[in-house]
Image (tube, rainbow, N blue to C red; front, side, top):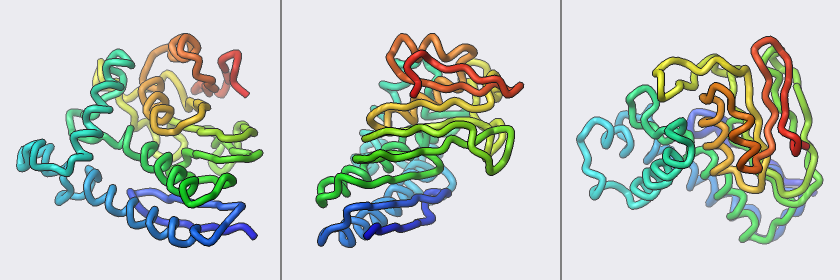
Length: 237
């Protein structure tokens, strides 16, 4: 029997598919859902009362925030250094660490299911996916054909992160120019863990030529250009 659950939270949809449910699955899903809503309460830049919003307005000092706020901002600072500033916790000049938080939340949810005994599950949030076991087939949205799939990735213990214009239009800003990134229509990365992968996808999408940067770091990638042509790193599955 497969257990599924869908939760609307963090401004998107999280879905869970557990192929090997056990006695701890229902409790684990309940804890995950509560945790996701708590993350949203603390980190949502769209909630004026969230700690991130209040911190961004100068109404809170970092020391007065939930310790996880400081931890997340430290991770964001590390990613900014690692990506030559293409990842930022202040896109458009506004404090918003969502580029790290969503992938981290999905990966943590998968880890909670593992701790409850599941080794065959899939967690997705906002189109980004973390799987355990397998094989799993993960469809990548076609940025030029709404509702269509551009590519399917198949494998075990996969994380798949896509940044692009398919759902929200040109919303990723190049921090170096302050203008929307338009060199690509979508960029999909594949790896073992979603938190860093999702952040890398956001950062690399803003780069003028991301595939050499990703190849040098051993990150498999598929790029779809605005004219529909596709380009991939040699190791993309």
